[in-house]
View 1: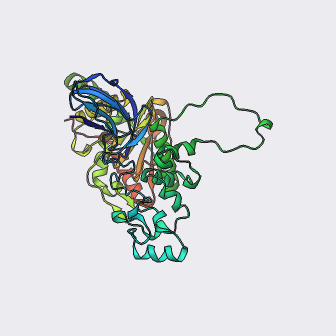
View 2: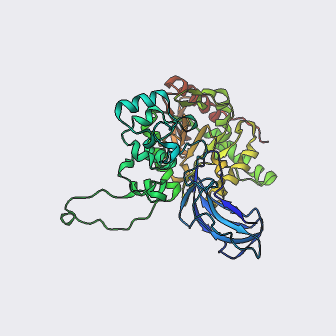
View 3: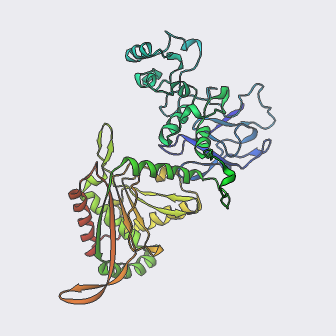
Length: 445
């Protein structure tokens, strides 16, 4: 019996994935547990193993294509079995509808008998407004509960275009500021897909009289999925969250001495390499547990109060910036933090970090000290309300008990969402962290 191979959901926020490669060709034998295909999400690239043994009967989605979670991308058949006649074309959902509702996203209303005027599911306010504006409800998007047309859908200038777009395309267009009316659809029935929105965003605007302008040199390298999503999120973060910054320079002599003392012991006893980032995670987690308001997140409905101290660490990789998360960092000793962070960082750089390992962070640390940076201000990692930017430890002249002495100094910068925290609350947290780093005591286990 043939079975479907679908685009898997690899994390709580994953809605679509890009097929990077097929590890098998049509007609080749597939063994359960071996890599079958590779996908790229907005957070990482992941190998997906086959869950059954058989033969790859049909590839329905080609390499480089982005499809929603749950899309059937291939068909697996038993050895000696032929593909059933009339098999669904590539890219179709399990229920054979290319725009089936996924992850709570309601599909747009179609021009079908059930969507004729008077039979469209719509709120009373939407019907009243549609009658006033002369809008055909069957041509409006349906984003309300249970697939109902609501007043916002009727009052949207591009509602006709929205009705011809997939839910993912609608949301992407809203986030990126793309006018759906100007996008040409490539899906079934010229339906607008997420890829069409991305293509419209990359398409350069017409430049008058190009012959009068010098042509720039160089070539265009397409963005990776991670780069594209990171850019979208950073623009949204910087424009929607009012940032303010707090700075403090601490005496890091005790921190340097502590690392020098513990590093050989941890290497001998637990085979871990102690880094300053390990120490920062340890002490940030302790400070966060004393100042839980720093972990709060802004939502339109109210403040989301987070309880679990899940600390993210920004990691530079060849494919872009990734932020693996150390869960319940306040409950871990230094040895375990060092071991977990080394594992997450290593897999982030080899491309084997799972999307779920980058979710649910409540605070982020970005350490550029290894790059020789003295100090910098970081952009918030949404939906988090604070991020710590760390520079290098550098020797400066310090006045200590009336004498000028050389001392290792470290500058910290805290970027804060002013909707969540005011200056005094942010300052109290940063002051607590500075004190912990200047007079460090810890548990190694």
